[in-house]
Length: 296
Image (tube, rainbow, N blue to C red; front, side, top):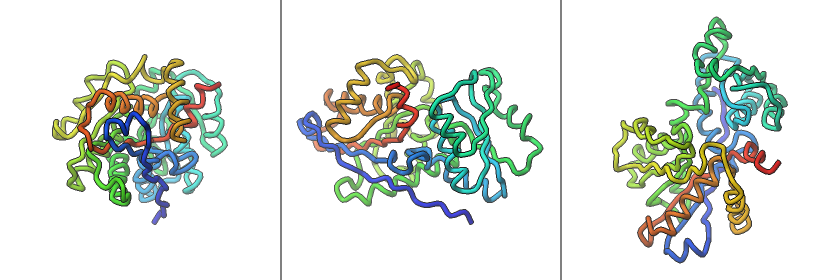
């Protein structure tokens, strides 16, 4: 049996004047502290994929991502840690950056493919690894049921915090939606009344609501107005917000996901979206290494 260590991801309260003025309690689930390279929701979403790969006696993890993908780095590091070789199909033209250099350092083989080829992931896997019984395909971002189950387990951590217990609202940033689905699954399994919120970082993704049709409509909210100019796009105002938040709390946020998440939460607090006395928990899902590109 593959032995996986439990991640260190404490819950910390955030003390800001604008939050206290509205009588709201704000907490952050520090998933970003779980591992230097397998950090945030990436560890959660890889856990059951690693167990499944081990169960089928695979020795190679094959996955997908962009050139700045935190998922690729997490898979490379996890593979090295738990005894798997790793291969990644990387979207787009060949390039070099710190993220990909770290992937190589952990032994990952990188294969760049065109954006058109990348859209046909199953065909890519079948073409290069279809006859390899020792290859295990990890969906982009660690998505799917295995990924959701790992995230759902984190809900049990809430009761370990004496100050938090059961939050009124829980927030996560949303790209593919698998982390939010995992939280919804965890809230449902633990029979909690917590409402799950997703701050969508993609522009024009309102149709994403259909991906949550199997959950009760009153159990979640998708917020689309905090995506800025779109995915992986930022401006000086967002960088200034990251600096202000870090200098006030000691918590660094990445530019792609978590800065937009926290900016959205603080905006909602300022707008009296929450009732006085309510508790808000935000998941910090890591992504800091990929986000360092904003400071180059």
